[in-house]
Length: 92
Length: 247
Ligand SMILES: [Zn+2]
Image 1 (tube, chains in turn purple, green):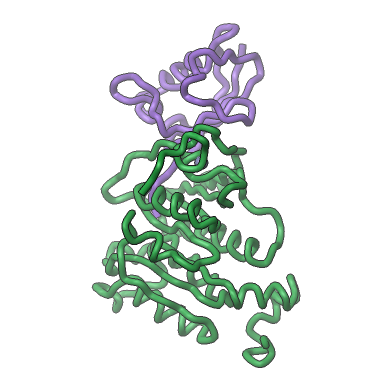
Image 2 (tube, chains in turn orange, brown):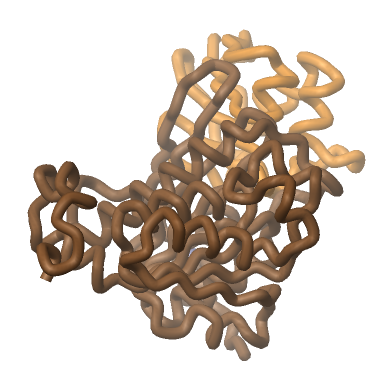
């Protein structure tokens, strides 16, 4: 199935734009995030800590709704879903 | 009262939202925390719009590396406190308003005093430690907080109405890591700062729809703006039922 990924800020720079990813039927949000991280070294770095844990400050949205970190392992995606990923910026 | 002062200055915006709205701007007190990339455009446009009292708080002095984006400061201001440099330009822009410059770095201990009495707080800071402090002070005092942040060509903004909307910690519960010298092009804080100033004018005059429960994201490379819906989090440590006892 296909899931559309909208990336913002540094993650967008790392990925180069929006993505449509092919993931297995019923894939979870975690599975999708791993797939996004695998698209490039910079994408992996933008999303994950060195330990492999998802960077806690990245805002995750699924079909326009916020996804809590704790739910990423169980949230099953469907064909045509849209995921948005935004690492907040800090400067002023 | 307006006509006693300066009939022409606000003519074009009074034509837009009326005399009463202009009176509200004239009696409003806005605290802008940070007189840097975001604070400069916020302060300049709020001064020009006739905000009665613009209070600037910042503990830094002007450095040459600030000048690509901190547009109220010029070459001759290098070494001066940013709030003094900025206040001078604001007073020249609009002598009809009161500009208060406070040369101090905001921290947990002084934040409530520094923003005391304000109708609105603008977060024009450059780090989440102070942002979270302002968020909690805003919640405690029930004063709206207008958040903005930038990096590179990217920016974000949201408006927080305590008790009614998602607060900063609902939206960003974990701060992104600090960078030494954040790369940034001056237009990014210019754009985000003006969105913050626009929110302030809308809030005070009661015009339009605020950026509440929405996080605006500006992508300057693509020249697109998006808003992500955000909501109050029940377990938010700043405004939710899980809020920790503080101070
Ligand atoms: Zn909150």
